Length: 205
Picture: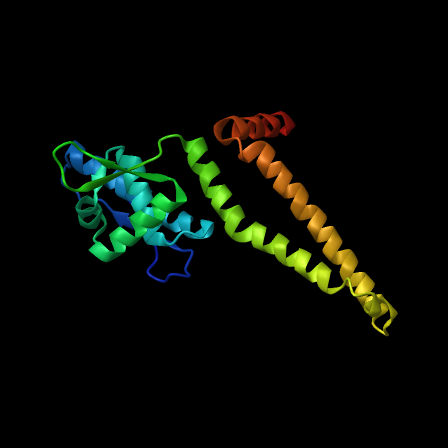
């Protein structure tokens, strides 16, 4: 039996089968292999969300194991430096998808992932909106203010100014509608996403 792993090139979409050892493996080994495969794939997918691979893999590790882990646990499992682990854990806590906790009698900090998948994806989407969509909408408004000068409408570029204004207005309208939909459905975490899923399922043939 084999699992597919990405080819060595970071831009390659070809997956190379990797054979499992022929010798029988223990349940513990099979469990870790399954977890490691999930962690690796989650790391790849996380990059498309604007999360670097290490952050995504740490999050996957915390989520899939379902147990609080300390920085040393993260370092050992993912084979990363303490600085990288600490920085990524701090960023995940800032995002709100990982929480810090303390164990009685322990001086070390422990970390755990949110367990509710709906809530987790809501937070990720909200963070992406804040980082990507909100700045674009603000830029559109700034561009419109630049074109509010009445003298522009009297210049030899009047037609081009009007066209640019129209394009900006259409884009602003789209972005504002998107924001409203986000607040209505995604902003409500689990309940909102459940509504979205129900609507989509009804629309499917």
